[in-house]
Amino acid sequence: MSLWWTTRRWWLAGGALGLFLLSVELIGEYRATVPAFTPIGSATIKLMLFVPVPVCLALAYCAQRFPPSPESTAVRPVGVYDGFAVVVLGSLAVAGVALIDALGTSPLAWAAGRNLLFLIGLTMTVGAMAGSTVSGVACVGWLVLVTLVGYGNDLHPYPWTVVLRDATDPVAGIATGVVFALGVAATMGRHSPLPGYTGYTGWR
Amino acid sequence: MPFVTALRSSSVVWGAFPLFALTAFLVVEWSRFAEPGFGTAVAEATAFPVFVVAAVCSACAAWEGGRLRRGGVWFSAPVRGRLRILVNTLSPVLALGSTSFAIAFVFASSTLGAFPAARDLLPLASAAVVTVSYALLGFCVGCATPRLIGAPLMLIGVYVWMTVPASSDIMWIRHLSGMQITSSSVVDSVEVTAFTAPVVLSVSLALAFFPLMSGAERSLREAGTAVCCGVIGSLVAWSLVADWGPGAPTTPRAGATVCAESNPTICLPGEYSGEVPRLHRIAGDVLADLEAAGFDRPHTLALVSAESPVSPGTWRFAPHPEHDDEFLRATIAWSAIPDSPDCFAHDDGYVGSDEDIRVWLLLLTEDGGTPGATLPEDASTRRVLPVLELSREEQMEWFDATVGALGDCAPTPEPPGRSA
Image (cartoon, rainbow over all chains, first blue to last red; front, side, top):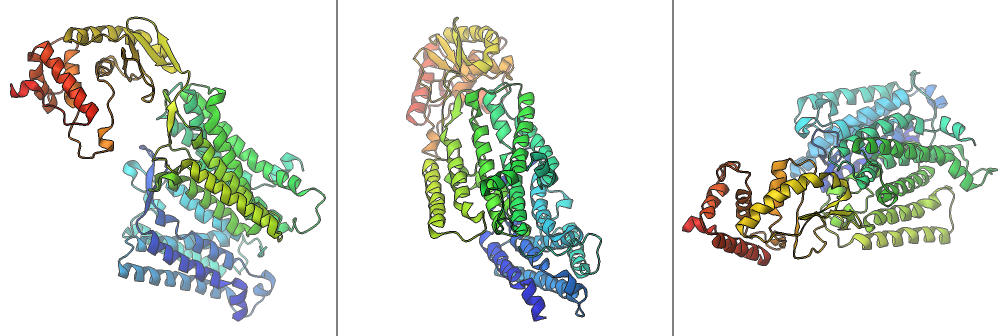
């Protein structure tokens, strides 16, 4: 277990989670106007949208740090450990967000937490299917994509964007749950021979 | 290494098609609000997608840097020099940026129907240098971080840096990101400093990160020089824009005005010269009405920068080729109002307004019919209509008093007919 913990460097993901919670607390409702493909030009986005990126990149980095040969023949279910780690990270994020929300200092905290879970799910799913190195690009690429084409008439975000929707939006909530579950399942199954698995990427 | 070989194995192939499509779409969208036939607008439209081009190029460069890092190129003993390896690796990335701007130029030029002169290309040159600088910075970051982190970090980092500051409450930071937030007009040009400041910052940042390129430990002298480059460059860039407001400062556009001698002489930017016959026809009619009301006939109507001084016999006006005849009549009528300071800039509670004299001028120059027939039946029209029943001298006295009050930022007088 300690070898698994040391090899993955999970403390990096934990540090990124701390950075995420600190950013949620500090950024609050700060908004910025960015160029967007809408009938009336630029859209206003919340800067909180980009806060989950360090956590997702750190998680993707930790998850790809495994030697495939020893782990594919391991007795211990390290894939389940990885999935468990992702669930713990998500749970800690939700707990932290709930605390910030209880303090009442950051009204967008729940939306940031929902976005983090969605992007974790997306990162881990893409990582399992197309390789870890692509998963980080997929995560931030999603954010760039939705800010550019995610707004419809009256600058109202489309439901498919998920991360642009309000925290109380049920469709975005369900989509987040599904994608996060997919991410956890993909992480657990990554050590079985998935078709897209491209081998050990190393830490160099 | 041949360019085609470098391109085949490069990450730019993945990002090329989406980037080209995005670039074309962004340029066409931007051009909807730009001045047709205006060369500088073509260059500005071409430079507009820089926030996407620079972000993607930087991410691709970080990816390529990560490949060299993973391949251990810097730690082995390569036959080629480091600079040669850098150029070979980055040439597909630079080709991606160049092709994106070329596509942007083609779309901008065809949409706006103009071709910029050499002096109009400053926005594009600035965007190109900023893109190269951030690509180099991305490469250096990629050499020092795993690809998993370096490429997405540069993609989102450059994207956020170039888009978010544009609406920041901190004014100077708006002018340093490399994305131009102020556009030139046919009478005003954005100051050159607006293009040089982001270039200074991006180049100095690239130099500051340069020692990361080899991935090896650097001497204190090299690292110190790089950090000094970054700090000094950032300070210079900041000092260039430190006292700017929300928009970049502008200067009157040099050598752009063409005058058509007649009565009155009409001076317009070259882009609007096709409108001279229509303006002559309408101006003759409107100025005759104003003369009859007691105004001295101007010898020149000029569309020039607000910062350019004009002679006493010259009236400023602001026609546009897209205006219809009715609006041009109003534009010429309103040119009788002399320049006045922006009183609201110093006093939010200023109670003066030129609305009444504008309505009065419209009533004086109305194209036939009963007074007010072509104007909306609103409170302003009802308030000013009685003024027309006064003598010519009384009307001009009221106009002069209003103009004087606007010039002194004092409360403007009520229309006299109302209390009479």
